[in-house]
Length: 149
View 1 (cartoon, helix red, strand yellow):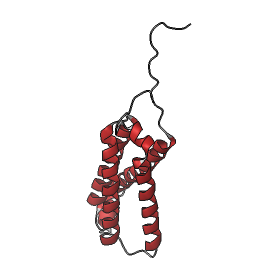
View 2: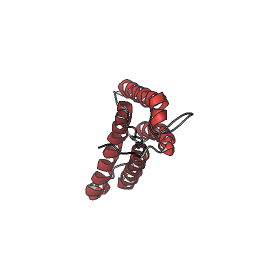
View 3: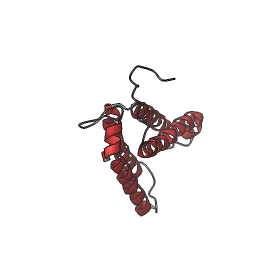
View 4: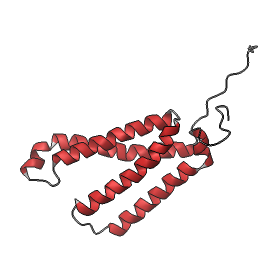
C-alpha cells in the first residue's frame, strides 16, 4: 500500500564518526563514574591513610565529569547544536583538568612521553571528527543542513 501523502523525511542516522565520538565520551564518563563510586566505597580507607588530594576531591571531580559526560551524550544523541559546542569545550576542559591533575596532584610517572602522545592522538581524532562536514551536518551546523539529507 502506498500513501497519498508526502513521505516523511527519514531521520539521519549518525555517521560512524559520531559513534566513535560517543565512545570517546563514554570512556572518560564511565571512568569518572567508577572514580566516584570507588571514592565513596573506600572513603574511610582514603581518610585513614591520608590519601592526597583526598576522597572529597575524588568524589566531586568524578561526579562532575560523569555528569558532564551524560549531558554531552544527550546533546550528541539528540543532535543538538549545543552538543557540538559543549563537546568541544568539554574535551578541552577535560584535557586541561587531566594534565593539571597529573602534573600537580599525582606522583611523577615514567610514562610521560606516552601520556603526551596518547593525549595528542585523542585530541586529533576528536577534533577531526568535530570539524568534519558530516558531523557538522549531523549537528545542523552551517548552511544548507536539512533533516532529510
